[in-house]
Length: 468
View 1 (cartoon, rainbow, N blue to C red):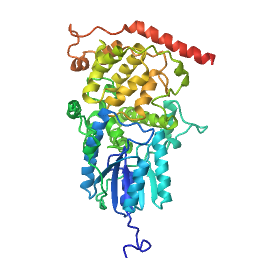
View 2: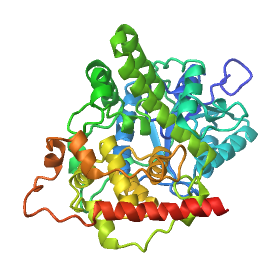
View 3: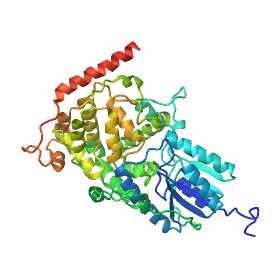
């Protein structure tokens, strides 16, 4: 009797709620749903209503549109499909599970403050309704509450944090993608196009389309390319922006097209086959560790994007903003070649070489003396890999106000950085072809003079902290 739930297996559907985990392989929530033996409904909610959520910026929305499309295709090849709905997550999921008479609701965890509040409310409401509601660790190697100091507090310095991670049990092996999904009859939804994530008037995404192919299939191709071809030279060449020696996996991790477990074990397997790659692999894996550190910091500081971790920096005497200087930085028209090259690369491709990110951020905060939050917001809107942890975490690190931050007196000299890491000007000329011509603007500031002004301002903060 189909209506007798006490006879045989409960066949009420399992709902899988996708968020920043847009993949079918190594997806613990999807794996649990398939293994439950229930019919599966896969759903993505565009929640632009719930308070506290930070909606993706323009470049990230472009990526999200295409990654959702690719996920739907992956699910359909296995017998499922992606249902897209919009609205406040708690209310929408209650309505959806009631409509389906769902027996289970599964998702992978998020770590921001508003996200955790929403997820806890969803879990409580579902369980009160008799639904098996479970969340899973999927997008970090180590859950934030498992890596603590000897006194039980969160780490604030990276080196001991990463040492503790490396002393913990090895991250679990990735889960295989389900071969088939017993897809339940899908409920009504909206089309991905209805979310209006793509730019239209104007369509400024041509450079993004040329640079990237979102989706899980392309993500695995990128991972194979990196560990197979580029990992060997990662340690030596990763700081040279003219050389394609970085992994380019950050947007894949940000949107969960790859899990950190997949990346960890792929790099580790290559290292174990060739011990000559040990040093390069260790440096690369430590970059995964830096991402972990950012998320663990977000877990402890949910207001990471707006509030200085070290509160003495609240007293930093940011001068009155000069919009022309900010605009010159945003558009790559500062007259500082490496800064301009990086900002133009960002505008065109939605990404920027990591070394150049540090230089451009230092120039904004310590030469232009513009509040780091202005730069963080610009990166949030223009990076395809802008995520709620790494983006503000790295900006606070450069500004000096964050966890394990660069010392206040560390001011990257963009001209010295250029001669060291782009000595032949290959990177600069690619993005600033008018460099060394009369068309190139004069520097908007004097680097030596503004460095002195920055150090004086930071001394004010240091003095205030000592007097407190």
